[in-house]
Length: 261
Image 1: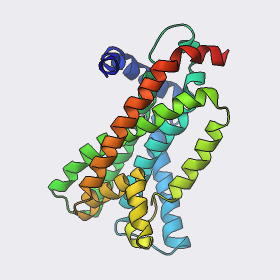
Image 2: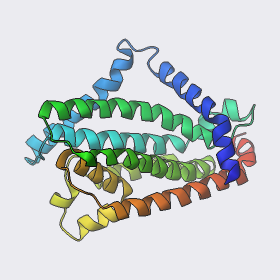
Image 3: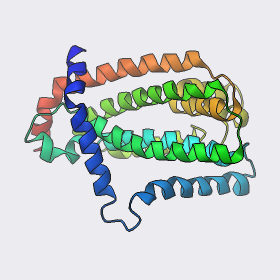
Image 4: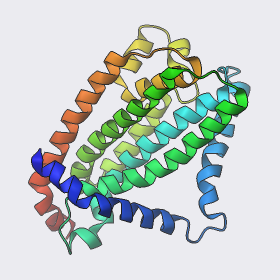
């Protein structure tokens, strides 16, 4: 554990610098540049709103805000997890020349995707002001909820990054699995209202993304208290899986270069 903390302190500046470079390279050849980080979530929000209102003829109060919260959180999680599978191979030019704790590469992706999520949540705040959604002290719970989101994302990413070095088909399996989980997470619908009990309770307890997104909506839109106990349990699970994932990477990272060659 002490080695993990030491490496995080040692390489945190590198993670931030590498994330900045990645973001700049992403928009370097784009005419709209950073505007895409605003347009993309807005376009997806419009599409999902159309599906919910026109196709399924079911909506939620403050539907754009409802969808934006779900999309922003899910996009961060799914992008980090999906990218983690091929992360070592994608950075082979670095890991084959200099030593860097391989889990730091996950932090680079998380910082990059967190910046985009921050932009999306800024749009959520604008929409909340536009809709004049009442706000009370419970909205402050979004901060620890986002921290739990980071822990859960890192936990799954660290596990998948290791096995992605050895399993060629893992990227495809993860991509398909994320598409399935997306539909079970309630991005465009309310899990508690639209899914019959006890299935809804099962989804909220055993799908951490469904739980976190539902909890964020409760404190940001409905001013109600979520299940803090369930969130704490997933925080503990996330910490344990993160430690196991990093220790697994430490144990095998010297063999990654040999596998890629």
